[in-house]
Length: 426
Image (cartoon, rainbow, N blue to C red; front, side):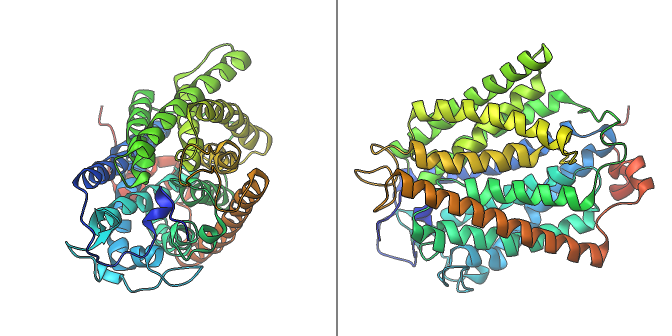
């Protein structure tokens, strides 16, 4: 089987070998690991924290922090093994539980396996943290923890194996997902949408204005996400090479184009562009380029970013205003729709001069039509599986602990009701 350059290479069998570690590649992956963790803490935490009301800011920060800690421990115990140990087309085995065999000298290609496993951990952290935006301001902290643990086990790890493990069924079919369009963005977006529907609307939605309480915090967090995304996409080359550099270039261009497109849409429709819209468009551009970032050039990235800003802007308005779904922080219309769009467009704009395949832009034996078909199959399979399992897990957690805080607690705010603290004491 032809080895892919990018995130998929990471999943090839990696027992200790005599291959010499490349210090430059290793340094880049260690740096990328820090950058992707920086996306969650403090990037996503601040981005989400500023978007909620004053009485819930600490609850969002706490949820992102707690998910980081919990998923890290579960990654060590069994999640890493389920995601990347060989086991079959659906999920990995437990051969690497408790990092069995992951030693200082074990390697994955030209980098230490410890660096690879830590890099992949940061992806496993940010994915359930993104889901928080779908149920922000109304879910019990205990229920959030249990749901996130079960969801990481039954959704994230299997889908990661499908797409990035050498024996995963979507990997074998030739799905192009360089850095997580399906694994991260579609799973998080669909889970957030299901959670928003199952939990129901926040009190007062949509008649009561629920404006972001601190746009300075949100813009700061968005800027951190932009910086961290260079590690997210560029690091997925698993090497310090031209593929990584091109992934960073197209990531930046798509983010800029997405921000411009969203701001223009607001300017036309509402007469004024907003900071919130501009940074949301930037995130849409980042999420949409993610699956294609190792396979497209700057021109393709520009088009992807512009399309992302336009489509995600309209998806956000349609979901909340037309359908009345209270996806609190727009996770599905930005990440879910962006992930779907980017995964499909990877099959359109893949360049024969770039990406994983020598002399061709698509997976082995593919033309554009076949590749788009595989991309669409990946979108449908991952989206459907995520929706069904997320719904079942929410119902299970609801039966065990209850999902939603009481009406009184929601009115008081989760900071006080769930944590006995306040974000501000002014």
